[in-house]
Each structure stands twice: as C-alpha cells, then as structure tokens.
Length: 582
Image (cartoon, rainbow, N blue to C red; front, side, top):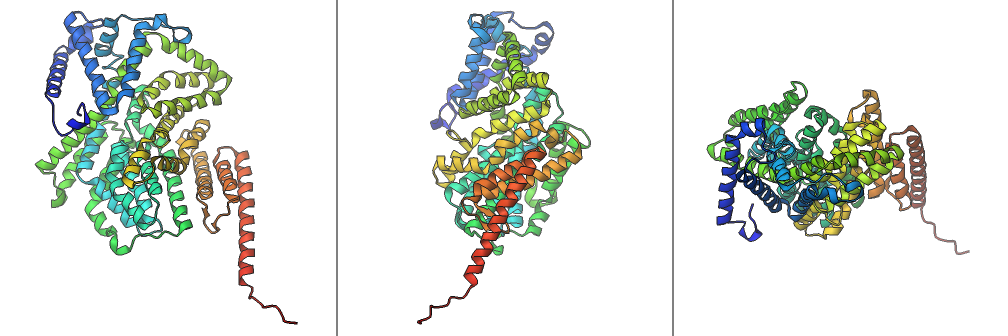
C-alpha cells in the first residue's frame, strides 16, 4: 500500500525501512511475549519499550491512512487525545485522564488495545476465513459463479441484471469486501446489462446493491461479523443462521425490482447460444459447490467454528487436482498466498488503529457514563434510541467509518438497550450492522454506487439514488427483526415461516409499486404505485393489524386496476361504426 497514489507501481526506500522496522519490533514482542503477558508492560518499564509502543501506534495509523484515508485516522487520534484529557471534559464526556505512557502502553501491550479485539479478530477468526476466501478467489471461483448464474438466469427477461445480483452476492459473501467485488464482477455484468437496454445509472445501481449485500450474506460474510463474534462471544454458526433470512429478503427485493423494470420496459434476456452450458459449467465447477456445502456442514453440524474454513480450504486444494485446468500449481499457490496476503493487509489495516478507541472507552470510564445515559433514553423511548442509532451509523458511514461506530455502539447502546428493555441482543447487533451497510449506497458518499457509476459511465448521484430505491429492504427490515426476532430464527419456527412468507408477499408488492409493474396486472397507473408501496410495507410489517390493513389496501387497489383494465380492453374491442348520414 503506497504512501501516495503515484507510487503505486514502485516501492520507496522509506517503505522498506518501515517494513523492516515493524517486522523487527514485532519479532521483539514475540520474544518478550511471556514477560508482556505475565509481568505486564503497562506502563512500559523502560524508555526503549515506550518508544517501540509509540512507533507501533504511529505506523498503525499510517497503515490505516493508506488503506482507508484520513477520516479513520482522525477519529482514532481524537479518541486517543480524549483519553489524555478526559478529566477536563464537560458533562457526559468527563472521565479519568491517563498519562501518555499509560495510554500508549495499554494500546501496544495491554489486553484492551492492539492485543485485544484487533488481535483476537485477526488471529482467532479472520485469517482462517481469509485463507478460504483467498483460495477460492485464486482458484477461479468468481468465474464459476458468474458462468453458473449466466447459465441459469441469462435467458430470462433482464437476464444480465439477475446474473449480476446472484453472482455478486455469491462472490461478495466469500470476500466480504464491496469495492473489489464491484470491480471483479461489475466489469463484466454492467456492460452486459447496458447492452440489453438497462440505462447506465440503473446497471451501476444494480451492481452496487448486489455487491454491498455480500458482507451480510452467509456463509462467510464480512469483517464486521467477525468483530461481532469477538465482542458478543456468540458462536459464528449462530450469527450465520440468524443473518440468512434478512440477507435472502435483501436480495429478493433487488431481484423483484430488476424483473419488474425489465417487464415494464420490455427488456429481453441473452440469446441461448451466447450463454455457457449449464451442464458443462456444473461439471467443471462442482468442486466449488461441494466445498461451500462442506463449509456450511462444518460450521452448523460439526461445530468446527474457525477450523471449518481451514478444512474447507484443504478440501479445495485436494479437489483442484480432479481437472488439469484447476491444478494448484506452484504458480497458483503463490497467487493464493498473494490474494490472502492482500485481504489480510486490508482488514488488519482497518482493525489496528481501532485499539485506540477501545483503550479510550475503557480506561477513562466514559463507557459507563455513555451506557447510563443510553439506558435512561431507552427506558423512555426505544424507537427514539433506535433512530438515533440509525443517524449515528449514517453520519459515520458518510466519512467511511464502519468499525468505530459499531465498536462504540456494541459497547454502549446495545448492552444498555438489552438491560433497559429486554430486547434481543443478537437482533440489535445485526440492526446496527445493517444500517452501517447503508453508507455504501446512500448519497452523498455512496462509495459503492460511485465506483459502479465509473464503470457504467453514469451520474454518480443518479446511480446512488437509484441504488437506494433498489436496496429499499435494507432500510426497513432491521426494524422488523428487532421487534420480532423470529425473522432471525430467534423464536418459534412456525412464526418464522409465517413472517418470512408475509415479507416475501409484502416486498413483492412494494417492489411492484416502486418499479411500476405488477405480475398479472401489467403496467401500473401512477396513482396506484404509492398505494401499493404502502400496502406492501404494511403486509410485511410483523404485526397482524398492519398486515390486515395492508392486505385490504392492496386488494382494493389491484381490484380497481383489474376493473379499469377490463373496461379499457372492452372499449378497444368494440368495432368502430361510422355515423349514419341521415
């Protein structure tokens, strides 16, 4: 990761110096691990150890700057400065100040800083899943997912858009990253969508929404889920099961809108002769399906936890030798290691400076103060606290922050809400994660939409606002599962199936209203569209009263539309009779 974009194709001398310096410092930490763990180095015992801790903090911030930009660095620095000046802060911000050696020593050598959540996420969970994801990506799984999606969906109306949804969802669920997913799959799917008639902004929005959902799509998901495992100590398999239905509803809402748009404007699919053979693609790529099934089996049934992706990577390595074209040759092995290394660098560069946030929240005592205030708000009005949480997620997301607001809210708002209201903890964590995801597609930043618009050659803001409409499920489904955790399988299975069916029906009607086309009815009149959007939302809402109201409203609108359609057909079928001359 170069210090400047113009150095992207070369390594500067100071990068080599920093690399050697950091490697040497951490080798020294490894050699001193027993002393750090048993005797404690907080505050550092010598000036030498204080200097090393300071270098580690500075380099962590610089690594984060190179990967994510200045916003994350500034926020982490502000938290670090706060821990030095907390005793001088007013009101709720008041806390205990710590001298610099204690603060920097806690970050480098203590269990609250670098050796806490960042090290646990990386060492316990992240590397295992990134090894699996890296091997899949290097072995050509992305091409397989794209081809199998083309073979299954390419010939249907709006086929390339449906291919983009499915292939990007599958690819994103393995890598957990948004922008690389858009670049990898969008470079193929976006031009194809434009070729059959999708406007550039619409094609870019489809890819942006589909790629963004990969971080909440089991089985692998994104880095923030790994942080959740460490902070909550909820098994990864439980989180994976809980995330399944909301993720399916997210992609279902996108698919229904894509199909409705294609039907309304008359878009066709791709010719059969231009599509790969399903049978041939499956015969060539069945190892990928088997490996994914093995991963799910290991996580859910065998309860191997983080060993499951390692075993799955081993199985992929063995199965690669069933075809000459997929052999894991020394070159492919090196490519896999490089891919894994890039993924690890990207994730760790984000995680390392967050240790400063954890230290600041813990050592100053401000965590207790924040929690008490949120408990008071939670007791008064839960909706109010949830809406504040949504605003916090969006504001931090606008500057590219995802990890920090989640860590802070997971340490303050979520435990306070659980204590004050008895709400489901898992549902609240997923609630925060879902709304943090909105920053990638919500203007004015909308990084996913902006990247996709660059490939599509469209207006970034037009692409972003279209992406918001296509991702409409993302904006309301978290409230549904917070107030009824059966949607995340935290309740009776009968209630889960009932709510899931209502959501499918409601989202389908809502999507029809947004796109102006309803199956068996055809194109919708302008007056009916907002009514169907409202009716679909009320049907999906997890309360029987709103469901009945929504069903009645939807039935009334559809009945009127069908009557008007029959009248129109009847009038058009009456033969024209010229007026009599007499």
